[in-house]
Amino acid sequence: MTKAVCPGSYDPVTNGHIDVITRAAELFDEVIVAVVNASVRKTQPLFDAEERIAFLEEATTHLPNVRAEAFDVLIVDFARRVGAKAIVKGLRAISDFEYELEMANLNRRQAADIESVYLMSGPQYSFLSSSGVKELATFGGDIEGLVPDGVARRLKEELARQRT
Image (tube, rainbow, N blue to C red; front, side, top):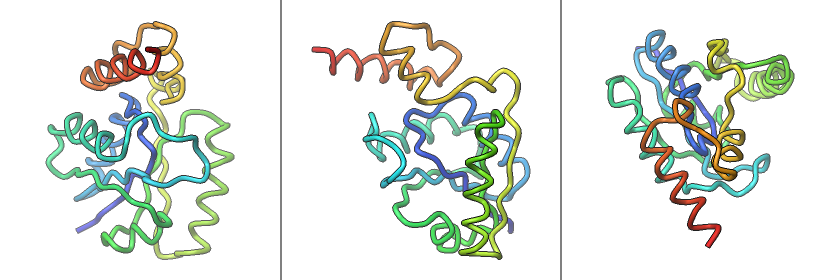
């Protein structure tokens, strides 16, 4: 059985994330969507890990070989713990490539037995990021079709709550 992890903050999950997860689910027997619960790179998440996991579970109900789980260790350590042999990430643009090349090499240095696999973003998602969606939603922009419907509702609720 081949297992892969798809790590990320998923704050919030976008339709671009779902596209990559769906495609990974076609390549691997099991995909664990690894939701980072501690990050030195990002700001404080808008949604806690449990809610991000719930968003992912709702958005991937059509994928029986996908589950979501929080992690707060090195991704290679998490991959080993769940028995995964691959780390799957999506690439949107050359700017993603630079960062991901660095991460792939650091991960390979820590765990040469775990392969980094990259899926190119579909053109309809090549511009899409969680931070961009949050910015659009903050200023009343249209986020329909960018995130799952339940995420769009919660995002609008959370941002409205923060403004009051």
